[in-house]
Length: 162
Image (cartoon, rainbow, N blue to C red):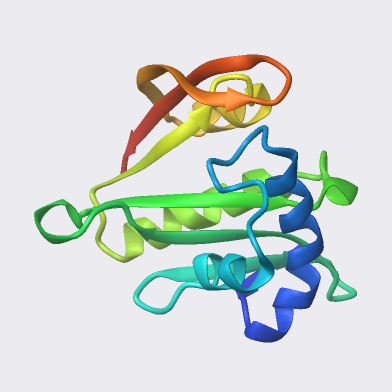
């Protein structure tokens, strides 16, 4: 698997699984009816932030990540990231590879830590992955997320020093 900078041309491969993930409404705080144009603008970030894709040896996009400063000004030394993996390619280590890549990017860019602001507590695969990479749950916003199946569930704030 290769992780490389995402291009606008990659959007055609990202959008189908991005749309399915967001429309499901069970892992991201994005509006479930998010349109393609807004989604592209929200996901494909300009430098100094970054958006990448993980591709296989045929060039198929397996997943994507966006990496950015979590806050501006005097809080700009903390990074954040978001990840999406095409359901057709789960279980192959794509999410782990993207997360490890983003941690390295953040270290090289001079960030002091990485923070995830809204990890849905029922997204147990993501929570387990992040914890295996050294993240801890700093706190949970009770009923901070309206899950389509489980109702109101917590949103974890997760953190890792770099």
